[in-house]
Structure formats: C-alpha cells, structure tokens
Image (cartoon, helix red, strand yellow):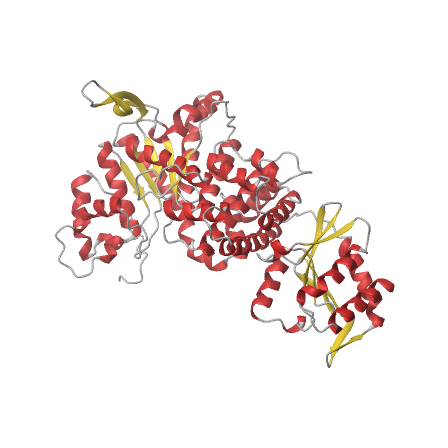
Length: 601
C-alpha cells in the first residue's frame, strides 16, 4: 500500500527533523488526500482556519464533499479536552462527512456519528512505530470518505439539526472574525458597530454573531421556501428568491450573496445552502404542521431548531411563544370592541379613512413657517410594537380574511395592498425574529391567495427599537444605511400614523436596557410624586411598552390597547400613579387576570 507507506514516511521524516509543529504535517496530508482520485482536491486555507474552519476542505470538481481536521502527533484523539473537545463537538454537528486525525490515529464521522477509528502508527519514546497491517483499512476508509454524496433530507427534525449545526459554526466563525478584524472599516465590524449604535447599545460581539448567524440561517430558509427549482440552491439564488416585501433582509443578503463576502465566512454559508438544496422545505413544513397538530408549524419548527441550536436561549425566549388561544382571544376582543364600542361594523377589517394635517418636510411659507398638507389615512391603524415572530399580526390577517374573501374573493389581493398592508404595522429589535416575522406573514398571505402586483407595498414591519425615536443619520457603511431606512419607516409610524389598535406581548424585564431619554421622559407620568425608595420595578420593559402604547392612543384621541402582560401593576403600591394615569386616559379597562404569579395568594 504505497500511498499510505509514503504518507507515513513523510510524517516520520518531518518528525525526525526536530522542528516540526502541527502545521508541518499538512503538506503530507494534502498529498495523501489529493492522491485518492484525480477529481479530488484538498484545500488548506490558513485564513479560514484562523477563524474556526476545519483545516482541509475536500472538493470533487468544485463541490465540497467533506472536511478534515488535523491535530499534532502528540494530541490524543481519545482524550480531547476543553477547546479541542468543544471544537470536535461543533464540527460533528455542522459537518456531515468529517475526518479527525493526528496523522497516526484516524476517526471518521458521518452525520455526527463516529463510524470508524483506526491507528496506522504509534508514537513510542519519541519514535514513530508504523502499523502496516492497518494501511489497507485506512485506504478503504479514505475511499469511503470521498464517495459520500449529500443525502436528501426528508424529516423536519433532521433539517432543524443540520441547520443548527451549521448555524453554530457560522456563529463561531463570525465571532472570531469580529475579534480578528477590529477596525470599523471592515464590513462585518462596521455592521456590528452600526447595530450597536442604533439598536442594541450593549450587545457584545458574541451576541451579535449569534443574532447574525440565526438571521443568515432563517434568511436562507425563507429563500428556499420560495424556491420552485429544487435541483439547485445557493446564497446567490437566495437573494433573488427573498420576497420584495422585506427590503432589509434583501439588502443584508446582497452582502451575503456578493463576491466580496469574506472567504472565512463564505465557505460555511455555502455549506448551509447545500443543506437546503437537499430539502424540500415547503413540503417538510407542511408535514411538520400535520405531525405536531399546531396551527403555526413555522413557529414550532423554529422551536425545534432552537432546541438543537441553543437550548438555553429557547428557554429564555419563552416570551415569544404566546399560546395561540391567548392571541386569538385578544385579537377577537379588539375586533369586537371596534364593532360595538366604536361603531365600526367591519371591526379590524374596516377601511374608513381620516384626513389629517401633516408637516411637509422642507416646505415653508413666505414667513418661514413650515407648511402642512392634507393626508388621507386609514382610521383603523394596527401596531404590534414588540412583534417577535409576528404571531399577533398573523392572527389579525386570519381574523380579517373570511370577512373580505366572503364578500369579494376576487378583490382579496387588491384589499391587501390598498386597505390592509398600509395599516398593519410591527416593530422588532432582533434581526432573527424580524426576519421570521416577515417570512411568516409572507407565507400566510401567499397561502391565502395573495398575488402581489408590480407596485405592491412592503410589509410594514420594521427592524427598530419601539422605545426610541429619531432616525440614525445616513453613513457610508451600507448596514447603517439599511438601518437608517428601517428607522425612518418606523418613525413615520410613531410620529405620523394615528395608531388606533395596539396589540401584542411586550417583553418583561425589570433590568430594562431601554434607558433612552425619550421613553424615560414619558415614564415620568408614572413616577410623579412617588416617595418610595425603590421604584425600579416601574422601569420594567412591559410597563414602558404600556406607557408607549398609551402615548400613541392619546395622540390619536381614540383607540384600544390589547396586550398580555405581567400582572404586578394591578395592585402594586408603586404602580398607583400608573393606574391613575390609565384611569384618566381610558373610558373602559377590561382585565382578565390569569393569576400567573406564585408570589400572590
């Protein structure tokens, strides 16, 4: 077996030099892999390796078929510890065809399972002792390794786990890249700083990499969901497939799909695209819905993904999974109140309009006063200010659809574009859930027969912090410009839209990170004349969102807030000014207390 014999001889010669490092043996490994078949090419890319990629990517005719991680001769593959063990765990989950070797010991992993392990030589007293009786076994193992082909994914659980494995590796590589390239002129670093400045001010590079990896994974998921050609898929195709109703995600994927994408990142995103090419996502999701018996299989598939990607985050984000009966109850109640308290027989489906005065930016009269213009807007403007994955907005669409489709089924698309999408709004601060919200709403509308026209409006769901106002300035970095456009769209809603219905499940957090001047000024109405030492619980995010909602309704002059919240404000001593303010603002307050607190009897 001359191929393996030659390899061991090169390893021996390198080792005997007395100056060998882990990297010294890679030339021998590269020669061994390239000798297996003329169509096989092993690529050792130090730039990628520095940010967490495996040492070798093995291609057949430019198609990646596997990966190899090379360790130093002295590292025992059977007793890996700490960072080495963590690395192996990440690679096993992300790379379905994987070799791990120190040159002497060889482990072969397929779909995370170690299938074979063998030793072709051992290190004894500083000398390499060959085991030629195992050379043929290694040759067979390598041939088995290079004939692997991507397998079709037929189970939702398999897709979720494969997605999660790739996303974990993307997260690590993004984080390592951010640590290596700290100058703001680097594209990814610039995006991190823009996100930190304009959305989540205390976000760490690790958390940004986490959000970004999820967003990439679900952006590709969304694109594949719209793909009618199942034989091909790539990050470049993803850009073309993403719905035009989500301009931010399309802008982000303009960078992801571009030729300028950093090689250290591009390879693993291409790997993830290969996973989606092996799956008919639309069919899998339909099957998953039937399997779970859930009305929202999309959201519950995400829960399955999170269980594999980050179980702790799944638990921490429990606030996202508002029980469907609660969502239905609140939306149904708002619809009913619009009909019976506001005299709007069509409720949430109402299409009546208002004509209001609006400032026309940049236009002044002869005395230098800003001019106003008359603007006609829908009366029933709906907002979910912490929309998450869009559960409440989706329920509004489902509530409205039977009323309109029953009257004029052929006018459904026209109604959506002219009388619903312009008045159905959502704000979300996290990229991944924002992308999912757009995806879910687009999927629901498509399933209901919506056919967009050439002038179709974007979905009015924006990546923004609902509790801050003011658009960030345009900057040279593209990411800042994308965020700026999102913020401007959101601020138009905050400033100019006569919001009438506010629905949703705002976040609960006593240690609120929303400490901006604007929301703190609004909160003074709830804190006025309180003498208690500790009024920190009044800074809980859910209370800030109630105050924000109250502010919008006061501006409009009429409306409804329908939300699920913590119940501490009902009888808390320091909440008395909050209760007083709400009683003075609203004509009627309906409360269903589910008694969800173990602190109260």
